[in-house]
Image (cartoon, rainbow, N blue to C red; front, side, top):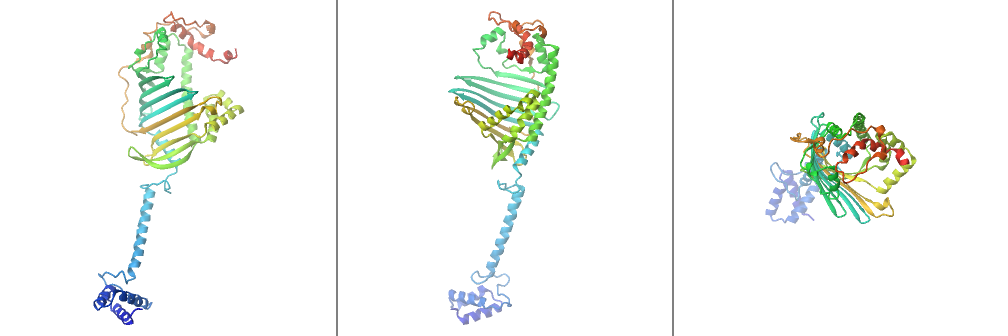
Length: 458
């Protein structure tokens, strides 16, 4: 129990304005123990009347943690201030996305991010694309695969004269053999240029090339110009061009342009995908990116396919409306299971930095008696957004006519279609080295005739 004399002394000292520490030091010097002083302080403070002024330290004096209630009050204030500041800091960080965890309530919806990404990519003037495409079929122990690595610089700063420059490396493998084909390509407005830097050895086809008078060495490291005019001149040189073909080519070109625009618009409107998962943000080339997994919406895809076929042709539209076709489509989507892809989109600039797709299909799902798999993969990276790029026409190039004319002699005029009969197509005897000219005379008329429904009925 606290000493009453000591309690009274403390109360009087507090009333005179002394601080807790000052009172404590005086009592220690008088021989009182720290325990006695502490108990007396507790009683003295509790006995203070509610209306009396609280005793405390004077200005410039440090309060005693052991006896003053003020430190506890200050601690609460400090904690409250720290909490408020921290909350504001977190809120500002989330709102400005300086700190942007997946659960951030200010984080934009993935669907909105992808929509804006598509608009941003469409508005790009220049961009670099690098990627790899891989396709493999393994069936009953036999393996066939194709791998293509490529890089492309695109320049759309002049919408009337788009340009691109590409390099590619193709590897074809089957039955223990590999074939390599590398080259470069350029597209400037409506003219394309192709150069093969590595041509695969094709020993099984060399006799045929010799018969046709084709020397593959003429193609190696040679820029070849390809456009409508050069193709037309080539066919004229071969004696395989008619006014009807020119009209058909113009009509097909116009039809293809219209179809491409319709398909783009249709895909943009229907959006046959959904966001399956939002993954943790990543970093690509020093840029923070959103990381999403998108999946094909099969129901939307089923509704979209008939519309796509309708754009392609009236015949395909009618086929898409058939009940049997719809049933086959349902079975197909069920067998291939889920189709997903990964997207990496810049958090600040909203450009697409990477797209990756992998799909493996069990052959037995389509052919129960067969064993094997089909693998399709692509991994494409985008960079150098709106960075300067120079794409120029090759200094030296040759047209198809300039390359093939020395190989094959001038052909006689093309036979009119009304004089053409399938039975008249000559055989291909090996002893005649330039028989290709005779085949090309019949080719434009033979192709539509061969693929006509009437021929298949017969």
